[in-house]
Length: 249
Image (cartoon, rainbow, N blue to C red):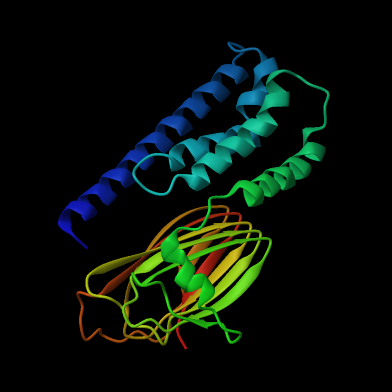
């Protein structure tokens, strides 16, 4: 890892810890004021509540330069359930949650962006056995909503790419691929789903995990010293109510 990047990562972690500490202190002060009668109990079910907790975790997740998707989703979910508490509405918002989620996902399916030209060679090159080369640039791009897939990448200059999973799953087999020189980034975004990445034993892997109510784990049982330590695959994983794992055969 480059020194500047490592310094930035540490700074982001300090930022998140500092913000988390401030939120915990504010929660303690609010609880103290409620218990001593300085704040009306009417606001207690708003400030001391699980939607506010989701909102706070989302705000902390937005700190730093990492993936902001999990934080934004948590803020939206927390705000959705906090709204009726603030305005003391009689509507059962829990019954509206899943229909609205389905509507949003449907809109996403209809209006998601047209594939970039560099993605076509990967998408069109998939055969029935799910063996595929990455694009000409050595990158993969996968978007799966309410679906799953299994891919075996055979590219000899694999450079990473981006995988988005919403209510679905992916199994990505990289055992027949070769890493390109330098640091290669694979971005994984999983929401209500799962991902399994299978890598060769000799690959140098760096896992950067930003997850809420989920997580990614490194379950490799076979790790060998790389013949070329300069070839690194950095997996930048984020998950909300989901997760994944890195494995070897």
